[in-house]
Amino acid sequence: MDIEDVHKRLMNFVRQRCADKGFELTTVQSFKHLVEEVGEVARELSNVEMRPDKYDEGNLRKEIADVILESMILGTTVGIDIGAGLDKKLDELYKRHG
Image (tube, one colour):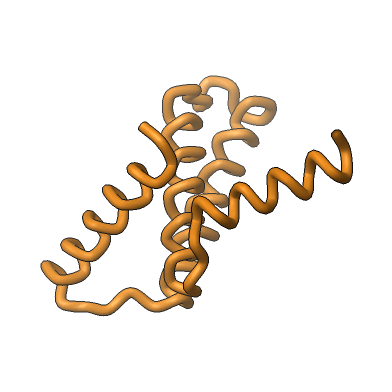
């Protein structure tokens, strides 16, 4: 599945969920969700050293996926073309470090 397919599928889900729940997704809400998901990644990574009995690699993978998806949603709320934005950023990275 390519990034555009993921993005389309994700935004269809988000729009349907918003309609079902009766609210409009805002940039602020989207950012808050992203920060929450980043915090969940941080918690799981902290568990590696501080609470190894609580560490769950499968959960870490899910939380990282949540961060990626929430980043895509946030980008959409501010009008970013996700595919074009990623291509541009990768080009910049290769020019700077490649």
